[in-house]
Image 1 (cartoon, helix red, strand yellow):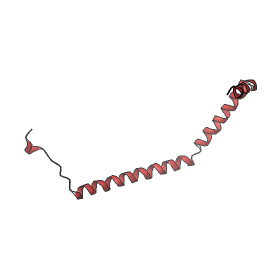
Image 2: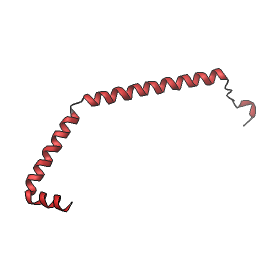
Image 3: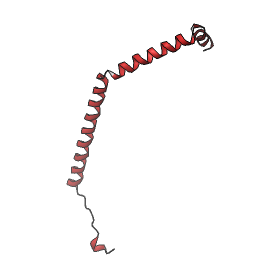
Image 4: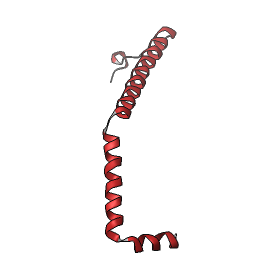
Length: 77
């Protein structure tokens, strides 16, 4: 390809500062979004429900296995 048709980007200090400001804004937006999402998930009842169900399942499994097996596990460990 002829060199007269290639486009060369020239970055000057102003262009670099503009790019830096642009990416700092984008990173700031993403950080804000991530923090708000973490806050929203923290308020969600889903985590509490999952914990309650996990405890119920564990209790049922312990009762199904019987108290003898749970004693054996604690003595071995």
